[in-house]
Image (cartoon, rainbow, N blue to C red; front, side, top):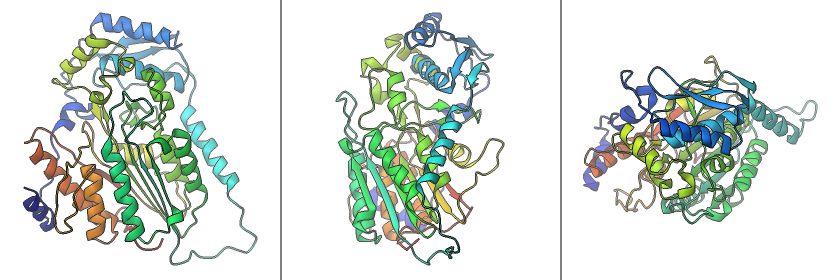
Length: 435
């Protein structure tokens, strides 16, 4: 199967298979005629857990489709996030309305945090000497931050061995074929990839690279339950599990996860000429189903969520809409400012309602290298080899390979459609040449 599959990808004779569980699982595509009959005992559990986690004035109501919608009063957006975590944990993503509550005393918490991050970066950058401005050099340094979290401090969280393999594959590729200096490639695996260590490296990448440089960031781990974004009614925030994220409760896990805010701030505040971010992660309810502390509703919740999702637990991943709106746009649709002529490419290994699949030792041509890790990252790395660092061509190769491979492997029962956003549209970015 593999040789023929690879040949079809290379020849470009593939019509990408974009249907599948995205339509079934994601609210953007939901059937407006579907109604959700949330049992009253789960509504009672929602209110009990609001009190348990200090949200004494939070409440829920039912919207016109029967979904639970946040009501009540909240001190800030942090409290709203925790309320969403509780409701979604108990009744699932589909039966939770994404409508943001109106009674929030301190709004724009996340935006204020991002602005504080921006001010910190500006303070850390040395001011240019008068008259020292000069055009960027034709080639600059290439920085890489590669994060692969396959083992976690809580042994109950299922291991993700492909994440470490993906990190090793990219590290070797960038150093041997990409021309990256060893000192400029930072790799954080497993116990090294604590939340504090990752944030410190993202701060460094926002501070150090200059207008002639290239920045590449890769992260592979388990995704954490996504939460609605107050600025955009149909877009979610996508946290990622760090090595030391706490799993004593769904709220603790969300609070101690690596939030995509830090990646977004890097994209929006970098001075680099080129920024490439690859997120190989997805949220899957199956991953945490056997960690009792993370199941607020027990068997009753699982039974209801499976009933809503056609027998499956929730799953989701970063969508192209989230990349375009949450990562790049400002509320109202305007594109957020970026430094100078910066080119960016943002990628997600899978789309809405999809899981990121493992490759299972696929042996592709022409290199003969086995794909040992996530099928997206392994095929994207192969594409970078084939196309000598060209990001767009490597992604096109990987998207075609992944879409067809997952369909064939699952006999049409699953899909995986990698997502990409390039700005400016059509920008050419190459990871192997100088910035």
